[in-house]
Each structure stands twice: as C-alpha cells, then as structure tokens.
Image (cartoon, rainbow over all chains, first blue to last red; front, top):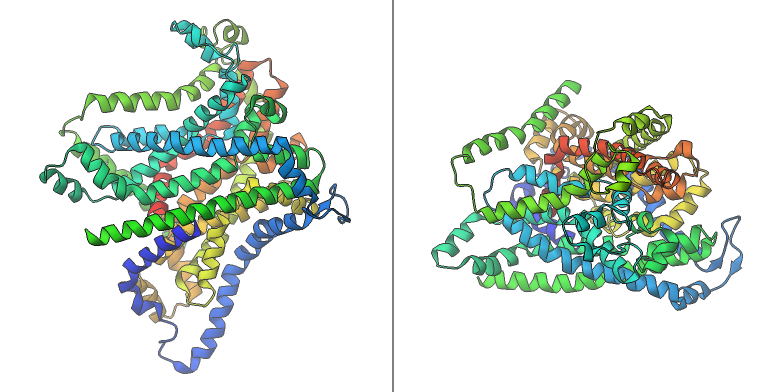
Length: 338
Length: 300
C-alpha cells in the first residue's frame, strides 16, 4: 500500500512540479543570508512542535503495542506484573498446530477471496450502469452508501433478527411462494458462510461502487468519443478503455477489501458470537484472538496471535504489492506505446 | 479569524450543492436513459435500503405482530417502543458517551493530523519522506489486529473502563487516513500565497494559522466526518476497554440491550434504529464531502 500511495503521490508531485520548483526552495533563497541560520533553527523547532504530538501519539499507540506484542508473545503471561514465564516459540507452535486456528485461517482466507470475487465484478458492473447520464444520480449515490455508514453492530443486530428461523426472511420467502427455499440461514454450517458473504457484500458493495464511480469520472470523456467515432462497440470500449483506466481504482479497492477481510470481527461476533461462530463455520482470526487471548486471560498467547495476524496481513500486503507493482509497470509501458 | 473561517466554511459547504442543483436543471431536457438502467438502479437501492427500513419500521410494531407475521407492516402503528427508549436514561447516557468520545476523537484527529500534514506538505527536511511512509504504513495496522497489545498498553496506563482509554487510541489510529487525505490538499495550496504572506511579514506558523486552516477546510471537514463516523461506529475498542454499563458507547449498548431483551424484538429494533440515526443524519448532511473526499483520496 505504501508503495502504491508512494507512486500516486509521486505522480501528483510531478504534475504540480512545475509550479512548485520555485517555491519549494523558499527558505534557502530567502534574501537575508545572515538570518538563514537562525531561520534554520526556527524551522526545526516548528517542525518538532507541529509534528511531535502526532508522531508521539502514533508511535505510542500504534507502533509500540505491536512491538510489545512481539515481546509478550514469547511468554506465558496472564496480564499481571512483569512476564517471567519465558516459553520461547511455544505459543507460536501452539497457534499454528491448533486445529481451531487452522479453521479460522481457512475462513479468513475464504472470506477474503470470496469478497474480491463477488464484490469486484458486481461493483464494476453497477458503477458502469450508474455512470450513465440518468436522473437522480446523487440520490442513488447517497442511498447505496447507507449500509456502509451504519455500524457493524447495528447491521449485525438487524440481520440476525431477520435471518432467524422464524424471522422476516423465511416469512417473506413463504409469502411469495418460495417456501421451499426457507433455511436455517445462520446456524447451518453449510450455509452460514454464504449468509455471511451476502451480508458482507450488502454492507460493503456501496463503498466499492462509489470508489469505482469516482474512478470512472476521472476518465476523460474524449476517449470514449474517439473510440465511438472509430467504430468501437460498447463492450469493446469497456474492455479496452474503461477497465484498463479503472485499474488503479480497482487495485486500491482490492487492497482495502483484503485488509478488511483479514481483520473481520464485528459482524461475525455480533451475529454468531464467540461460540456459535465456531460451530457455524464463520469464525475469523480476530474472534480466535479475543476468545483465546483476553477472554481466556492468556495475554501472552493473545499477543502471539496478534503477531501472527499482523505477519499474515503484512505478507499478503507485500505479495499484493509485488503483483500490483509489476502490473502498474506493465500498464505504464503499454500506455507509453499508445 | 472566526468570521473568515465561518464564511469560507459556509461558502465551501454551499459550493458543491449549488452547481449540482443547477446541473440537474440543465440535464432535465436531456433524454432519460434506458429503462433497464433505472430498473437495476432501483433494485440495487431496494436491496441496500430494505433491511434498514425493516429495522426502523419494526420498531413501530408489537412483539405479537412480529411473531405472527415477521415480514409484515405495522398494524396498527405503535410508538410505545420508541417513546420508551427515548425516555430511558440508559439510551441517553450511552448516547452522551458516544457523542463525547466521537467529538473528542474528531478534534484530536483533526488538530494533530492537520499539524503533521502541514509539516509533511510544506516543509523541506530530510525525514519528510520517512514521516509520510510511517503514516502510510499505519494503514496496514488496523485496530483489530493491534487490539490485544493495545489493551495491555491502555491497562498499564490505568485507562481501562475510562472513556479516555477509547479516545486516545482512536486519535492515534485515525491519523494515517487523515495524513493521507490532507497532505495532497495542503500541497495544492499555491506557493504564491505563502510567498505573499512571507512578504507581508507573516511567519510560517502565522501562515499556517491564518491561511492554511481556512484554505484546507474542505479536506478538514472530510477528515472530520470520517473520524466522527468511524468513532461513532467503533465497536472492538470499546468492547475491550469499557466494562461498566455507565461507560458504554452506543454500539456496546445496542449489543447489551439486544442480548438482555432478546425476547422483546420490537424494543430492540427501536433501540437499534435510534442508535443508527445520528450517523445517518450526519452522513446525509455531509454526503458530498465524504464522497468527494474519497474521490480525492483515490486520485491521490
């Protein structure tokens, strides 16, 4: 992610570059050379004053806890006093050999893959449709964003009430004559993961569509007109022009979706809870961490799980970056030849 | 100072509304587009909105209505559930906690984020790139992943079951997004303005306070809304940190309420819809800012 962002801002900087070159060097070229030294010190002080609080806060509550987890992960520790019971890599061995962890790992990766496969194409198609000149576009944009704005807790509470055995979903199916489709949406282990995927798609598709719409609007209209004049069909235009130019947006969305899937917690915890999620087959890594760490009072073990989760996310992100980076380079080359 | 801020805030808030309203008027004589598009759009909106409407309408029913016909409409409409929730001190206590936490987090995120973004965007020094990468990397540390060690840190600070224990980490975790969104905004302020201010004898800090803050208000508003909604909806951190019901924020309250009154579905639905209302109102007021801000963030 940092790389993609890096390239993005680099491009941004390039485009602003011409106007910035003169101004960027303002402090050194200030007319009074004698006061330059004093200016330097003053500038340092300003930098420290302005950036200090944010950086300290960030290091203390984001970076430091993760480092601390790496330390506690080597101990059997129940959260009181200093950890003394050094167990080496034992916690990690236990995690990786625990069938329950292998289960949640499988679920997390399934959710990650299915989110990409279900939401990606759907969001692109919906964005293409909604990008046409139709009435009420701004209203549509607001309404499809509503599920994303509502908190996971409320979404989970509402859906679990609707999907109960005697809930609204089954009642609705019966009323419209599809009674044979009634099911135990939440507790049937074969079905539960698909129910979860449906709820996840419902909650996050609006965000994906809004992102894609934003990406589509940044594509210059002249390109479509030129292609039309050249006799390209609608689908040819979408395939050859829209999709490649939408690439950066799709890749950013996919990254956000991947990270979000790997840390999925709220929805599952609200709808299924710590215990049922295990039997229904929807438990995630974060649920495992809560159950085995804080709720069991094993903070050493919980910290080790945090480290494993972090490493998995990091590895996935790095692999993704490699793939994305290569793709972006290829895109740049083809753009150059066109 | 405050007058300029208010003026530019209003003009920037009204800005995008006006032209879009006019554009709709200009588009009116144009053709409507294909019926298929409208059909899909309506279907999509229906799927998105129906569950929300179900929750809101369900609060107007009685439990026996819900039991006999789970997917039906209220008959008759009952306001007792909503009135009961609105009269309960429990709802308002949790509401107040949520507001306090969200406001404090938003102010912290915006103030600290704006300061550090200004440094990254407008100062030239060696560690600038490293500073930006630090915050960009922060996007890879979602709160859920860090929650167990974070809980230990908060516990060591003695802030468990204290609203500060939620506010302070939320500020820290809100900074990466803020920096990523605000830095391009601050970079885009023309250098001529800074030079003009310098010629007039304004120091950089003066430039920051008098020019940058008003000029970057659209970005600041976007960041502030994202921070507020993020805090309003945050569940995992309060779940770890807050133990006593007096300190619960609304998401925790909804969950506790729904497990406590699991047989009283109508009441749960009323509580739930009242809990989501503030975020929805907030969003519909500032919708253009959020969507616009996301657009800006994607473009980098």
